[in-house]
Amino acid sequence: MTATPTRQSDAQGMTVWEHLAELRRRLIICIAAVAVGGVIAYIAWPLLIDVITRPFCRQVEDCQLYATDPLAPFTIRLQVSLYGGVILAMPVLLWQLWRFVTPGLHKHERRYVIPFVVCALLLFAMGATLAYFTLGPALDFLFGVAGPDVAQIPTVDRYLTLTLYMMLAFGIGFEFPVLLVALQLVGILKPRQLASFRRYAAVIIVVVAAVITPSGDPISLIVLALPMYLLYEGSILIGWLVARRRSRNTPSGGNDSLA
Image 1 (cartoon, helix red, strand yellow):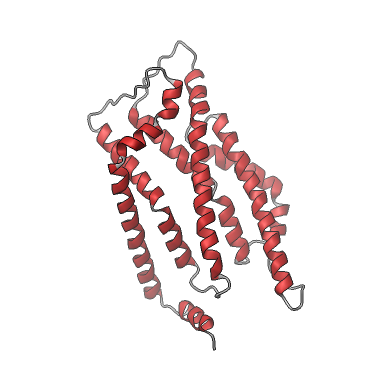
Image 2 (spheres, helix red, strand yellow):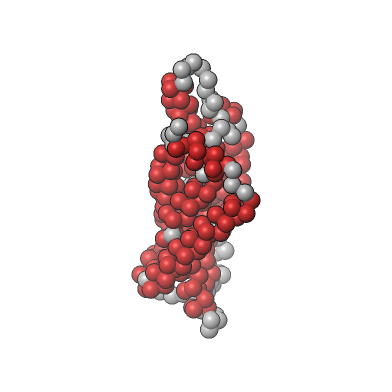
């Protein structure tokens, strides 16, 4: 009688071509959002380059980045604009992703959409911000590891690539608990499974942090791995809380699909 089962059955009864058409429509929306964000970032280039180079200027007295290729300044501006467009379009990207992968959820489950998007945005922003403030100590380590006899000529493309990759890697790393919570909500994972996997998870997190950290220095690795593990524990706690709430709302009181 309600609209929810009908909507769910319609979503589940879509043909392959209808799913592809839906995917194409959402991809077009995402590309358009990134393009608009990229134009904004391109216009705001002076502000962006000033903010991005501050960690470098704190480590180097003359604060001078060099370009060894005539095309490098233009290319790096386009690259920064693209990354900036992705960051600015992140709310749209997450919303489209959520709407595509969960079309068959019940009405009471669709209320998780807004918390999902908000938490994902906040965690990505926290990760990118942490990477930004980690750049100073990381650059200090990288500049000093070769000793005073090695003179370095920092180029604008290498530095900005390092900075953007660092912020992107940390932001993606902080999305880890959102994925785990989502998998628990749909019943693929259970809190007890994640809890029993703690020791292995700690090792895997360190390995992943070492792989996705572009600078390769131990400071960035520790700064990324430690919060990722704490967020892993937080996702387990959230899973337990959701399971407990579901068990209370279940008439039998014992049919807990999450725990």
